[in-house]
Length: 178
Image (cartoon, rainbow, N blue to C red; front, top):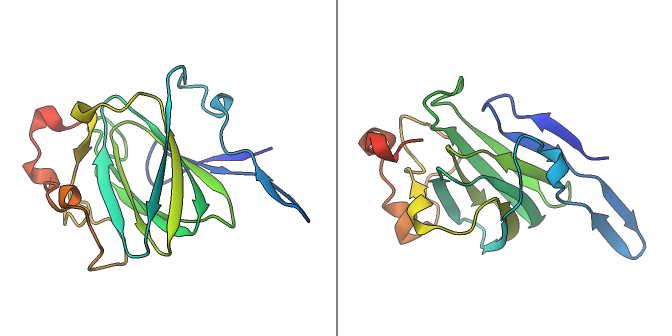
């Protein structure tokens, strides 16, 4: 049975230690069950895959109407998280979590928690979201925001034009904050 652990630094984020079954044929890992997250219904969802080269940083992104559940299937990444929810006990806190596909874990990321990852190696991330893609719900904050201080441990990652243009937290309008 997989073990679900509350991530202590940011309220509502959960880390799932996935159970792996290996034999001479390979490995089987059950990566997701909606019953692991009874506080949220998963009636509509979309599944996505992100392939990244080592040195790529994606994020920080956040949503009003979507949660993410991540599972790394290849490589190693550093997940960056920052709580942007004003009513949260952990508002403004940030943290990182390293994932390695050889030690399977899932990460449940609630709405309003900014998230991204830095590819420590070439990596493949699969993720399930509880809503269909909606461009109006794709928001971002600067990966290196000095007010959030996400401890990435990197100084010059490869970023997309979109992520390069993400604003700092202090420049985000109130109506664009969770």
